[in-house]
Figure 1 (cartoon, rainbow, N blue to C red):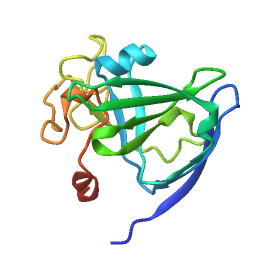
Figure 2 (tube, rainbow, N blue to C red):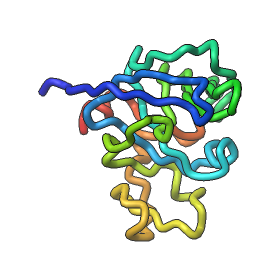
Figure 3 (tube, rainbow, N blue to C red):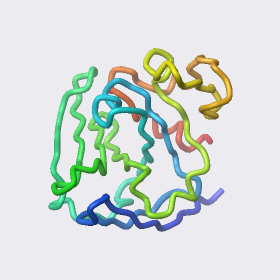
Figure 4 (spheres, helix red, strand yellow):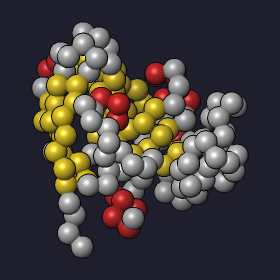
Length: 165
């Protein structure tokens, strides 16, 4: 089965950072509840896994913050140098970039999201479903435990798992 792609545009809240991105027709979207993401933006965040060279962006407009994940590998966060909106995260261990989903101009392509790192760290007022339906049940079985690496503070699937869906 041949993969289908779509082109989307987006940018930060102040408009200084704009980008074009090529996404899978059904992009891999994650809603991360980990402590790192909560500390970074104050709550749950949704990110899109990007394929290599999928985004056209002027990185000179971005500031960065680097830290070491629990695995000992570097995680680099890219944000607008003017309004500080988070734009991308690069996870060294997987050599992958992740785009903050809310920056897309048109989010209609985002039909589903997988909750990650919710068993131990989601807000108590949220009911999380193991089938990505974040408001229907309070089941907390982490269906992704074999594919995720909890020590990296979110975002991670193996590339083999991405192609199985």
